[in-house]
Amino acid sequence: MDLSGFGEPLMVATKEKPRTESRLRRIPGDVLERVLAAHANWLKTGGRRGRQADLHRTGLRGAGLTRTSLKSAILDGAALAGADLSTAARLKRDQLDQACGNWATKLPLEFLTYRIRHCEGEEDSDEASGNAP
Image (tube, rainbow, N blue to C red; front, side):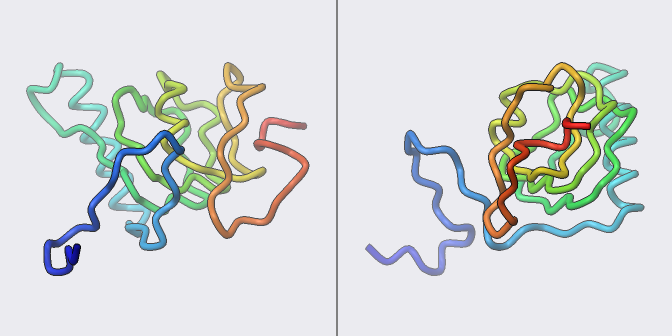
């Protein structure tokens, strides 16, 4: 069946973990800061102001996501390779399960033994995450 011309690619539900999209959204650092500030306001006001951070299919290579609450942030398909989430607050395992990273991805201490799924095209490493000293 030809589904061309129907916009976004159709996502089919499978038991496999989601693959990194070959086309990731890229956002400049200043825009990311505004998105995270709006998300913080959204959390603080119970959704009355601001906006939930939607970072799905976003390339966040090397981003500094420290000292920010990622509660309810949408990270489906986000590429976190080399990102620093070491002091990110309220991050959940199911959020990380939907994202990918590499050996340089720094996760909070509560995820010390968590093995983040590697992003396609990233070099393999013996280290599963950036949590090793």
